[in-house]
Image (cartoon, rainbow, N blue to C red):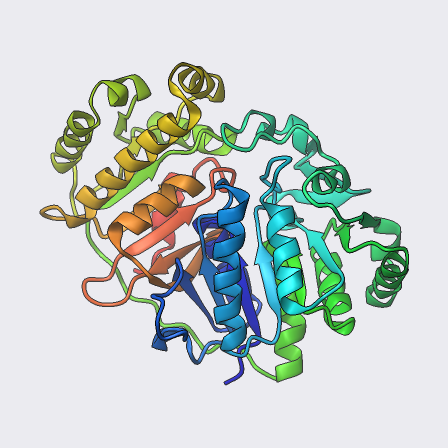
Length: 434
């Protein structure tokens, strides 16, 4: 079976988001967490008969040179496996800084495929992310007024993505605006050609609904772009055309029925996650709060206290327990200013990763688990040693349940901090196969 789409994703939650979108668009999809072991130069057996393979990296906030190196390694593996199209997946809020990493990675990948032009479209209308005149909206608010301006790692203070990307690349950045997109794939292709002729290597592309993304995907494939970049919405638009051209469709899914204790580990300080924590607590859910001050005084003691607290409350048929290090952005900034951004971030991630491992590996271990926050999810999954995931039912747009192989299976939801309805932490468990 031909590999129709190979994707390099810059974090783990975004990768599950994309994989969920591809499955719902009809492509059999395998998600690989991290680069497969070097040596064979081949995809693992579980991925060799898939329509699409997504490789999840943890490159969003690391030095640009390291992000480029890892992304190129993943791209070469996918292309070596015969991927017909390469897709670089990043967040629908375009999380990055003036130094990257979206621009540098895209430039390197475009050089790798021998291309001279690619597009950038993070729009994900199902989750309220829309692009209009090059400006990114989250719901009704501009990106810079959505809460993302307070992001502790990649604060987004400029909603104009032409300007944002222009600060990350030495190449000219153009715009395909909604007037062209609304006229369909042929009009979009015409704009691609105009921008190429004008010397643009990159183009931000407007999109406000799902039909726009399908048209953009058709235009990109019609122009034979070897590389496209964007959020999972564009991945879905590409998948529609790739499935049609190959005459393929996803086989019926048979998901495992996972039973056992349930837990939630949250490290995101986004508005959505803070609201989900508040809703969970108001609904009577048990919460253990991991405070940065306590971690600075002794991480091992906090980890032990959290696990002991959870152990006394875990029950195979009972409600989930929630362990959260999520704090308001202004509080996080205060800790970062006092103790260093990287130190505080690593301390939180490593503590939550150890707690997650203890929840799953301990006696009567957790079998149904939600992890909230991109950095937290990456650290937790790495600590658990999970390398391959099957995609399960969608919980909310961009967030599916996934399943590990082997017995006993672990049902795992990796949630981007910005995603999910207020009742996500409660409703998610109701969407697992009974």
